[in-house]
Length: 248
Image 1 (cartoon, rainbow, N blue to C red):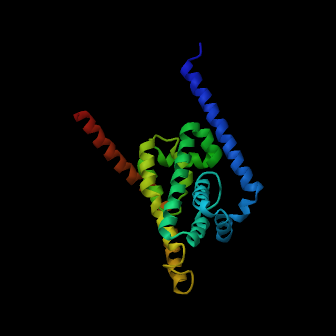
Image 2 (cartoon, one colour; image 1 turned 30 degrees about the vertical axis):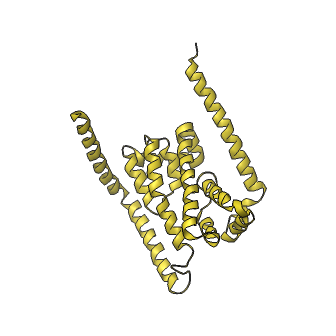
Image 3 (cartoon, rainbow, N blue to C red; image 1 turned 45 degrees about the vertical axis):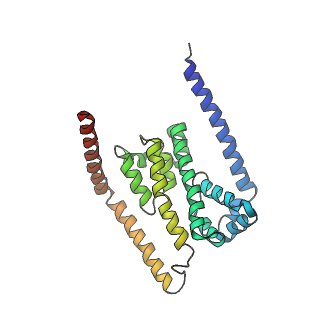
């Protein structure tokens, strides 16, 4: 005899899968069919797309960032720059953050609902396996570290985090507090008004980019040591939580 709860869960999963396939198929069909992919290659193209929607430009802008955090394999930096031509830095930061955060939640949800096979399809089996080894046993600490550090694929991490032991509340709060930080920096500095993209500004930008590259290289090179350090911190927290539980 088939368990009714199990049958209900299977039916619900099939319905959710069908809806998701229809939504993804529609979005990707419009994306390539209408030639939107060609317009999103630079900020001028994105600016034209936003301006043609008038009062709905904010909604479209949020949607673009949502899609770039989930389905579209392109950087959202040109979109942020284009948004800087239309919105003030604070509004640009807010709209971008909403799209990116919702996209992060969607990626995490896909991992939680559809499991490893779905994440392998989106991210790639090899990348998923490699990143999961990094997460193993210290998921929360690694998630926060990756969200903070530059040049890490945050969007990919959100998908993979969904198939780890990280809970919805922890993920949602972490993303809500951390992901807006790089967004705000890009919205304010990406316009070139604070640090111009000419003259002395090019030297400063070169130094900043070089610093990020060096930091990323050092983190990657010494990741084993950093991993061991995180392991110690994680174990100390786990030991403390265990003691508090026993004392209660």
